[in-house]
Length: 489
Image (cartoon, rainbow, N blue to C red; front, side, top):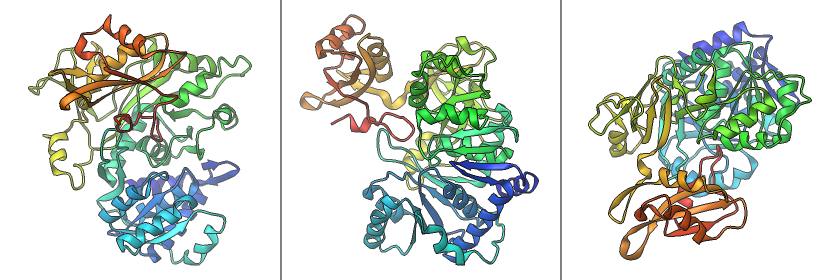
């Protein structure tokens, strides 16, 4: 299904620009040639519907060529973090059947170690200056189109609070995600999408790569985020759609209003992966002419909601309404819907949803219930149906025998004038009791007792952190999510 869309797009959009990467530009016709070449190369090297290709790559054209080639062969593409540690790669490769790993030079030794210790026979191709010539002789005969493979991509969640989960999504899942997202946002062949977020993550993959290929739009790709370069690229390439993450928008907003800009081509900028402060959305508008909208999604289901409010000033902190063909409920523990304004657990229904976690039946049973995906998030809807996120179920811990919502504690501390950022976690206390620890990035000199005193005036004693740790920055993954598991120690 999705491959047919790609095939039709490449045929009809032939002379239009498909991909821009630095000084390199590819039309859709040239992209089709690259995909055919790489499909043939991968097939000769053993990639099949049962043996996939692992992409351990930063943002680059090769990521796109090899993903589309694997899709054409009906083989799963494993979208892996190029910053993965050897132990993480060891687990992934030992759990899956992978024929080829295409990687950054920095990962070559790690993958050779994995191959030796797991006794897997996968081929390693390294992205470097001599890479293209090393596979030129493999570029024939043309590969046949295969559409019936169930597994299209395999991803691992970021594991911000625990062990990463393996998620397999089908071609139909991806087709439905792209159709739902593009129909809701109006992305078309006239758009140019700037991608600075990692393609291996669901945000960059679904809301940039899939969105562009589905519509026949232009995808402008940056290997990594560069604040100084973004404004120039937006203007030079006529960027109309800009997906990013809060930390990127915050850095761009800090540049202040650009009153010398002749105007901006941007019509849609949206953030995902973590909450975006309304202040940042407004400051970004001063420089780029549009508010940053919030998008809600998950690796298991792709994008599910986006704020497209015509006048978003009052709803900037909302993730908006469900995408077309997506249903989002907010439920009580009994499973009944809450009334508007009441907090409950979020449940999602979408044809873009995976069926569960590979090798984790208990977690699958807990998160996938009666055709709904329950990501573990709390939320509420206003009287217009706009969804607001309010923490996670795994942020509820027992402290002093009472339930504490870490989101609530963070919200209070974040309002202290000396605090720039805060994350709150549960840690082992005296005789096994769980106590709270606040990890703070301060704006100015601040003492632990100041934080505790501030909390004591505003919260019950059992919600007050027993420890406060000051750090220069919070640990984050590639899209800006705080890695809470690294804060527990």
